[in-house]
Image (cartoon, rainbow, N blue to C red; front, side, top):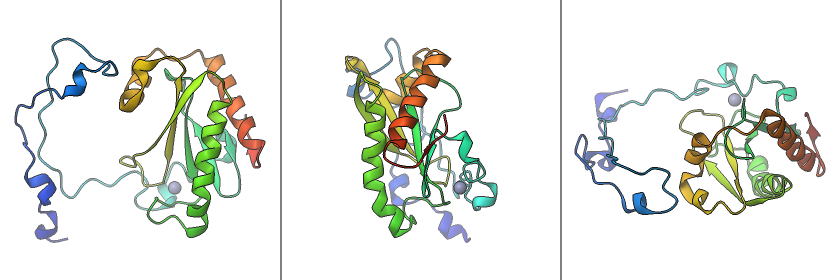
Length: 201
Ligand SMILES: [Zn+2]
């Protein structure tokens, strides 16, 4: 790759690298998890080329491809649903991924057609817990090349947890008890399996 291809894009060229930036208005909102004397972290210089994401070199070295179905909450022929490795602060955080080593842009047409119904299905499975006001769905993809969609359950009534800081609150809140976390996983897996596939917990 030539140096030319490592030149920052115009999107980066105009960023205030290293400058002091004011707190955004959202810092005053109820949903903002922090208070007190805060400062914005200065932006670092761009890193180009970016380091490869996990699994970028193919399925052989991909943790998700190498996991057995039994390690997931639920699987079927084309899709797998996993919980996190340990409890976190929310009632449920699960990840949906295709069985094959694809990212969103190269998802085969058949899988892409299934994705909409799968999104609905996982959201319904999290609502099966009861007491869930909203299920957030995120596709980030900065860490791993194997497509994975995050589903996070916001407890009913917790208005401060609304919006884009839900995943931050998930880190802040004390982890739920292991027994509750396991029970929630069983409810979600059973709800998924009720429409096909296999629950593994
Ligand atoms: Zn993979």
